[in-house]
Structure formats: C-alpha cells, structure tokens
Image 1 (cartoon, rainbow, N blue to C red):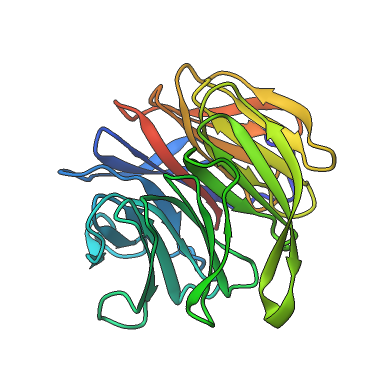
Image 2 (image 1 turned 45 degrees about the vertical axis):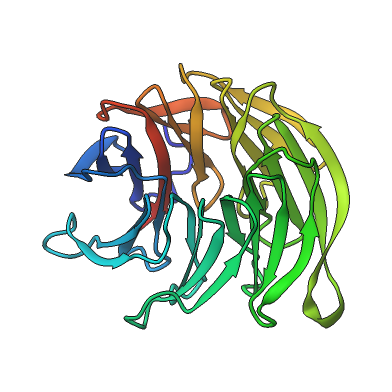
Length: 314
C-alpha cells in the first residue's frame, strides 16, 4: 500500500470538522488515536508546529494552541484573542518561534510565541483576508483577500512592498510558494490559477514576473499547494469534488484524484511529496499516492464536513 518502505516513520494526520471535533490519526494505519470536542465554534485551519509538539487551530475569532505531548492534549495551553472575525490562515516561521495569522477582519498579525502578550505586529488590508503564506526567505508574508488583492508584507521594513491584482473583485482563495521561493501561485473562486516567477529584487525584496495562467477547474478552487522537494507538482482542490495534480514544468495535467463525493476543502503533502491528504464535505479525509494517483486510505469518523487537515512525519 505504501510504496516507500525505507521511510517508515510514523505519519500523523490532524483533521477538523463542522461536527466540532478535532481528530488525530496515525495516517499509515488509519487509526484515530485521539478525538476531542471543540464546541461553540468551528475550525477553519489546522497547523502543527515545526517541532511537531503542538497543534494550532484557527477559529472564529480566536486561535488556540494545544500541546500534543501533555497529559491533557485536548485542553488549550494558550489562546490568541486579537482577531475579531474568522481566522482563515495560520502558520509558523521555520524555528516555530513566530506565528502569523490572517482573518476576515482584514488583518494579518504576527505573534511571538516566546512572549505572553498579544500580537506583536499587525498589517491591515482593506478587505477580508482568505489566505496567508510565508515566503521561504522568512522575511515576507503574502496575503490574498476577498477583493482579489495579493499583497506582500515586508517584515523587515514593516510595510506592503508589492501589490498584485490578477482579477479585480474575484476573491483569492489560496496562495502557495515553491519551497525554494522561485514560484508563487494564487487560486481564485473562478477556478483559475495565476503563476508568477519569484525573483529577488533590490534591497532583497521579492519581485514577481508573470509566468502562466491556468484554468484548472470550472468550480471554485478552495486550496492550491505546491509540493515539497523535487517533485514539482501543483495540487488544486475544488468544489467540483476533484483534486487535480499539475506538473509545474509546463503545467500539464498529470492526474485527477476522484473519490470524494462533495467539495474538497483542503489538502496537504507529506514531507517527501509522495502522498497527499485531502479533506472534504463528504465527512472524510483521504490519503493519495502521488506515484499511483490512487487513494490508499480513507479516514472516516467525523459526522459532518471535514474542512481542514494537516500531515506531518514524526
């Protein structure tokens, strides 16, 4: 079932659902080893910290941090309360000391996890934020909003250094950056991906050169994600119930992953890029082999739509 026998380290999956639960799975066996309720609010995004020890849940309007190694992993060890509306994006700098978030309140916030006080910095957009990613140079955040704007926030200069508007008024649903920083992809609600070559400009600021326009789906694209390592794939998850895998060298369609019965909200690659996990309104999460283009595991326990997932090696 799993092609790479040499890499047999545990592979952990976290999922969250509209049934107000978060579940942790051993991805290779499909075993759910921990489930805990998350009442009163739904989770928009899950991320595991770089040290694999903590799980962060982006909610409405708070962010909560769970210690997976504690005796009570279901009890938040910290709550971040500065946002006023849905938190749609969350992630970490590579050391895990800095966390960033983006919200429908129109702000991108920076949090220093070593400090107790609230957010250290805030960047304000004019419309709700749907997605935020950290450039691999660790000094720039890129946000996409409901009005179709893409903004680059320079963390050193504390300002917006670049603005892109591929389609005025068409919401940007997802952003992704190549692991080496050479490519940026934005996906919108019309099923279109816009691709830029990312170049280092003057004063170390990133410059963007238009590279490709890809009509990937007829429905919404809810998540786009570039694979890690040398696989050079782009995954696009859509309201049309499919996930498509594109080779970024020419943007040829390589595979169409079919099996979900409703919208596919989220996806995440394994660290080696050999597997992709997806989350869907059909209540399931599924694990796919990139080599075979086939489903190798179905995770069934949630009672309502599974809307976010994250995958990590131990």
